[in-house]
Every structure is written in structure tokens, then in C-alpha cells.
Image (cartoon, rainbow, N blue to C red):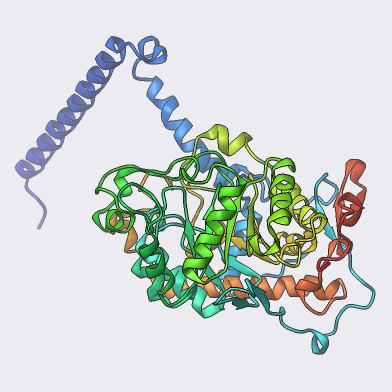
Length: 500
């Protein structure tokens, strides 16, 4: 039955009225924005170009997303390009990671790393798993592990409960360790059953008294928790050397506040250094104190700015005795990441890992401490070539935070500091967290770690050694000017073999 003429006319009149109403609302909104723009006194563009200037702000905001998905080439983006992210995503999903028709990487660029293949690579039947390494052999409870690639510090608070659960469960499946970050030990770290490195940041969250000093009772309680294997005193981290941790109050939930010893909604701003560590002597005193109280290997994490500090520290260790040395040193490159830091520190402070890691290892060799002190390297190590280079340069272990964030599903939306992470990793919004299923993501974390170890092994076998920890500087070359490469042991000749 066809609608009547009257009904059609009524419908048309309604649509016309609705159209006029919408146009009127739009006109009213434009007038309101115009008046707000021309009367405000803070922005010249808004006063001079009212209304239309907002299109500029919109395009500026959308620009980073269009560049990421439409305009940037596979190896152009920073901090991580599409080729790096794609490798991690496929490794985490346990998919085939082979490529065809040749590499898209420009191997003539200065700084490019090339590995030295042998005409007689290691056969599969001759290959062996990464050997076990003992950290803190003289401690009451030494830590023994063969894991090459581990999860770097990410605090509960900086990342969400489901993210912590997935990382902890994934680390357990893969057999690697998980660093707690400076936010204290949460139940979610423990629930997964992974080996844990408890990080003591400058605010000493989780082991502090009301005044912010180290609470020995709390430290013993943390040390007694199952899974806690080592303690790391954080002096500085890659993205913000000289600046303490920053957790905006919007992310300080009642649960996080209880773990850290804060008020809900209070900004968690750590001091830019430990108040009770003013020099090298007090650093060694703190290491000895934590090691004595916990009975477990204790070291420190730092970004290097040069060799002078290492000379002074290692000379003091030699004067005090080798037992005063840290059990490990975690060196973070200036290219390390964080959820929030001043751009001046992210862009311009500290040495990159390519320079600081060989420097640290060489100084340990120079002072006769290389066997005593294990070296852990971090700083944009997310692919097998990155990790293999670090092992060649002298690292005993490598760590990554952002690599494992990609394994959790991070899309590099650059919203870590806004509590609006679309993948649920760095947000405490329940609506956004619900998309991150810990059990499913734990499998991806484990796949990523295992595939990383397997492919680093493939590089090692192509170099003619049986397992990755046998790599040394003779197995690696670095492209210099004019596209010609130089052996790594020529660039850094102080150490020809890793284990001196």
C-alpha cells in the first residue's frame, strides 16, 4: 500500500524542519567559536584566523597517524619503523617471518651492522642452547639463568594490570625474567610465576618508609616473595637521565597508591636521584646493604655520559676489594623509552647504547672486573640483529620493554602518558583494558622471546659459533663512511674476546 500524499508532505516538512534546525545549530556553534577565538588573548592565530585555524590543529594532530600508516616508508619511522614492528608482531604471533626478493634495508648507511658469516657454519646437530650464567655466585641465593632476552622495567601504574599479568605469565612460559620497574611489587607480578628483578627507584616505592627512606623490613619482605631473584638500584634510565619517574595523578588509582605509598590521584614524581646516594662510596654502600638484607644478587642501572665516572667507580671498587662490586650493571642507552619525560632529555641527554655498551665492557676489562660483574644491555633492542650486536659488543644479557609492548599489541600510538592507550597496555580505563586478554597475550610474549632466541641463534650459527653467548666483536662489522665496513674489534679493540 503506497503512502498517502498527506503523509509524504508531513515527512518532507519534518525533514526540512530538521535540516533547518541542524543548520541553525551549526551556525550557532560557528558563531560561538568565532566569538571565543577573536576575544581570547593567548593565541595570535585564533584571533587573526578565527574558526578556520581549528582545521590546522586537527590536521596537525592527525598528521602523525597519516605519516605512520600512509606516507612513511617501511624503514623511515621513529622511534620504531614499520619493518621493526612487523617483525615483532609476526614473531609474537608465531608466524613465518621470512621475506622475499631481497632486503629493503640500505646496508650502505653509516652505522649499519653487518655480521661476519663463515664458509663453514655450525650444523644444527652441533648447536647448543645458550649456556647458563650465574649472577652473584657469592650471594646467599645466586641467580642462574640461560635467558638471553628478558623483559625490562615497566612499572605497575605505567602499564596496566592485564599487561603486567600477560608479561608475568609470558615470562614464565618463556623462561626469562621480568623487571618490576620502579613502581613496587604488585600481586600481578607474582601471579604469573615468573622470575622477577625488583627495581629500587629513586622514590623507593614498595620498600620505603613514610619519609621515603629505605625500609629494611619491607625490603626483607619483598626478598622473601617467591620469584624475586635480584635487586636493581636504578640511578637513571635511557629516556630521562637526571629525571625521576613520572606517573600522572590520573593513573594513580587507589590500588597503585597503596602499593607505592601515595594518595590516590597524587602525581608520582620520583626524585632525580636517590637522596641517600650522593657519590660512588654511598652507591657501593647501598649495594652491599641491599645484598646483605636480601641475600640476592644486587646491581644498578644507569645511562652513561662518559668514561670518567666509570674510572672513579671501578678504582674505588679495586681499593675496597672486588667483593664490593655490584653483581651486575644494567646499561641503558639514551634511545631507551618511557611513558613521560621532557623532550630535551629524550632527545639530547646521554650516550646511545652503541657507544656506551662497549665503553662499559672495556672499562670492566681494564679494571679486572669483567668476570665479577655481569652486563645487561637495553635500548631499542627489539630484533635479532639488535640483540646479536649487543652480545658481540660484550653483553651477557639483553632486555627490552618496548619490544614486549609490541608483543602485547602496542601500535605506537604515542599516548602512553595520557591514560588513553587504545590497546589497554598503558591505561587504567576499564573500557580500554578489556581488550587486553592476559592469557592470550602471554602466549605472544612467550612466542616473541622464543623466536628472538631462535633467530639470534641462527645468526650465531652463521658466524660459526655453537650458541649466541660465544659471539664476540670479531663476528660483527659496522659500516663507516663511503659505505665501507669496519670490524667491531677494530672500532673497540680493548676486548677481542668476551670472557677475559
